[in-house]
Length: 231
Image 1 (tube, rainbow, N blue to C red):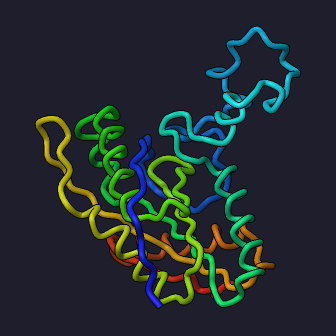
Image 2 (cartoon, one colour; image 1 turned 90 degrees about the horizontal axis):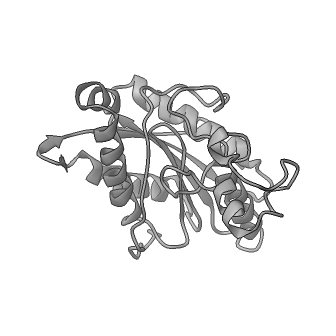
């Protein structure tokens, strides 16, 4: 009951944060993804301030749901796609929706030693390695700092979800070449699995985040399943 992955086109990735903490609020924190509807980076326009994101057209709509640093979906789009995946689950009751929450181990050291520019380059390379292990129908989002969340459909069991997570984080332990430097990081991952279309999306993300934090405490470079088997 494993899942076959066909490599998608590689797209760009990410930006730094220094250390992980459980999800609470992504606002007013350093190195977090700015909100394109509120950040001063996005208000240089001749349009009235009252003009909605949707009235400003496709370009603004894209900025509202993508990380401007990486082009990846942001948390808003991640949650929307997770809602859609759970809705489809109602028509495929034998499947499941897995949420894999990943956080880099050792990223702070790279930033502190080589600077944020090298950190950015590292995160781009990390994203490329993650994306080539995912199907085009899967979602990889950057929700802040060096935290990424993958949403995968048709995952039938915790065992399958764990195998997929291993496939994602395994290549990250190989060295990365940044200019004339070689750096090495690993990743910790937490998994939650929704097998019922009525499960709340925010619960799946929160439980995967909590499981990842357990993996960090247990020594890093490991995978933990959520205590709650969401259903």
